[in-house]
Image 1: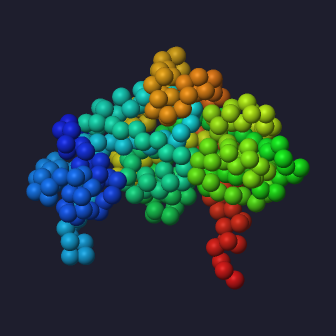
Image 2: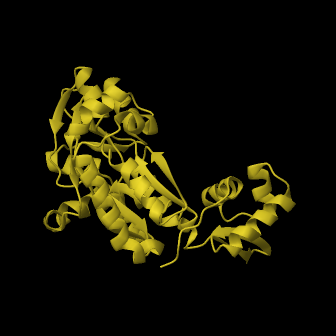
Image 3: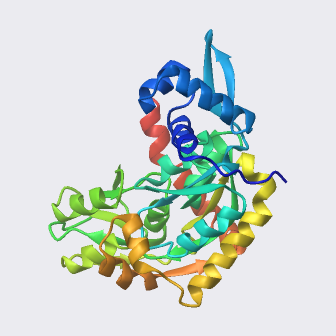
Length: 324
């Protein structure tokens, strides 16, 4: 197993830009980081010697891309903006045993997070199982599930203006679509980019219902909206870019240890809510809506295959995709 690499701050800043925008030429990198081409080329060569990036000729231009071992210098962990992962700070610290530095990136849209995982923009992601399964398929196995996560904290908020549900807001190929299947809420699905957007659409009566997670569901209840709970057997699980598959056992153990610390009451709610950019008291009162899973619940997943198939490929997809 290869060892972790401690990076200089300037190396780390350049590597972040490469993760975010690759493949980039030296000239393009120079514009992104605001440094001279000679400075960038010197840093690229250093990162290349460390085995973190490679330079390939594409379209007649030398372009820089991360290698499969780039996590050794900077590991990027993606999560959704939710009360779901109070163990993530313990996990971040634990991951320092395999990476020189660890960044946590917060997303609002599950499917985008899963896509970025396949693209290598993040190395690990706490993401809904339907998103991970869908992207595993379309990326040819570029994403794999390597650990447990959380479940609970989901429901359908009902607009006060709606007499019946004809439209429902949700996020694509996510646990929220799974929630709609479990609650059997029908209606035309309108896909949105995150919890706040869905919540606002329901509050303003632009949709008849919205599938939400905590803490947005708590806000909805506080604003007087009716809520249908959906007891889905799993929500977000730990996915990895396939390049980290050989470390699956180690990563799973680190997550299990982080969850166990959280179970024992070691929770820094202030730091976690700051990471999410959410109100601390809001996060504090919604943490208990979730249950933590040290391992993927395989029996529950197996029993839910038919529902998962409908979420990953709902009937509406082929109707919308084929222009007849």
